Each structure stands twice: as C-alpha cells, then as structure tokens.
Image (cartoon, rainbow, N blue to C red; front, side, top):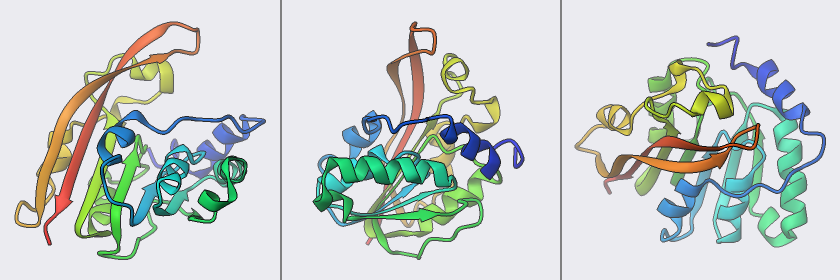
Amino acid sequence: MTEEFGKDFWEQRYRGHTAPRVRQPNAQLVAEAAALAPGAALDAGCGEGADARWLAGRGWRVTAVDIAAAALEHAREQAEMSGAEAAERIDWVEADLTTWVPPADHFDLVSTHYVHAAASREALFGRLAAAVAPGGTLLVVGHHPSGHGTAAVHGAPREVHFTAEEIAADLDAARWEIVVAEARTRSVTGHGGQELTLEDAVLRARKRP
C-alpha cells in the first residue's frame, strides 16, 4: 500500500491532466458543510482543489494539503481563475498526510474525501480528528465496501474501503458527537461513458466544547 499510493503514484496521475479541468466540489461536502459558519478549514488530500475553492468562496480560510505538486499546480491555477478574493483565502501545502501533523485543536472544519492512505488509516484519521477545534466538525468521506462500481471508476483497491461506523468507533464518545454515520449512493459517469452508482461512507462528527 505504501508504494502503491506514494508520491510517485500521485504525481504521475496528476501529470496526466495536461490542462486544469474545472471540477465541482464533492457532493457530500456540499451536503454536510453548506450550513456551517465559516472559519478555519483543513482540506486533507485536496487534489486539484475543488473543495478548497468551494469553501473559500463561502468565506472559509482554507489550508489545502496534498502530496502531489502537480495537483497543487492545477489547484492554484483553477483558484486564480475563479477569483482573487477566494484564492487569497487558500494556503496550498505540499505534504504527505501519512507523516504530516496538523496543529492540534485548530480547525473549525477538517474535511477529507476518498483519501487512499499509504499507511495506517486509523493513525491518519486520528491526526485529523486531533486537529479539529472544540466545537468544530470532522467530515470523513470514503469508498464504502459495498460500492461495487468504485474500482471501475477510480481503480480503488478493497484496502481503501471502510464504513462510517468503523471510523466513528475510533472516536472517543466522551469527546465526540456523531452527527452522521451512514452510506449514501451517488451517480457518476465511468471512463467508458456508462452511468455507474457508487456508494460512499459518510461520517460527520462534532468535537464537544
């Protein structure tokens, strides 16, 4: 897993995108964060920055982290094209989430979508949870084990699948309120143009003040 989803893998993946493509924010982020008051946000595994741009456009100050310099290049370009005001609210950070440690109790929102952990998933999500400020929100979205179409679209192996309940079980109930822990379906267009139904694991939790 470490070698498969290391820096070289992601650099090659994003280098293949010869021109920045305008991407939409993840549907689960829009569903879960639209009603939150803006503050400081961490977009962990930001890719080409669609979620970071959406958050910044709604007034958030965003720290957007990704392992791939190529992804961040595209993300910066798209952010600048979408408007200087929002772009100035995003700090792009090139870092490996398997070793990078965000500041503790700092962010009002920590959001991560479809991260392919190269090391311990529990350790990664534990560090992200620790970065949420008291009263803040943790949003984790991933590939659900029953989402049979996921491999056809993303090439995601079974090792990166999990349920929201598995992630929730690792959170200290004395410190966290589980707001959402469920599976949700979404429709996407596959590489061959076919319509596929995927299933996401969605966890939203609030750190108790």
